[in-house]
Length: 183
Image (cartoon, rainbow, N blue to C red; front, side, top):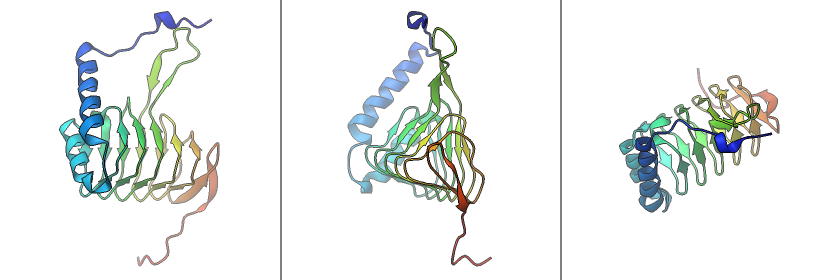
């Protein structure tokens, strides 16, 4: 039998106040609005501790739980309704596209324990990656450089570089070959 009444979390009052402040600022003046407000969103994320590279596109209605756990490379596109549920670090490499409705989820619960404690592990996404619409990336996953993840996939395990994956659970489809690239 689960004992949720004894469930505990590690958050201090100061941490909760920081998250509340972030949620209010982001909800009121960060998340709403059209794409051209992307530089404003990048500014607010940096203000709250995110490490954001050059020329990001951060669209409206993106949700970031803890910006201080977010690292975004250069020329990254994060589309509408992306949910970055980052109790732990989320790192997104250069020239990567995170499409509409993607959920990057670093947190879960240990259901083997009666008090059902929160657990978390980082998500690392490489450079030149495309995570297509409505993909769920689970805690602890590493998506290496050049990967394409097909729409509505569920990524439970690490994905090797320069391959295409899709499905639930996500599985290898074929190698990714780029046309028009001169070595």
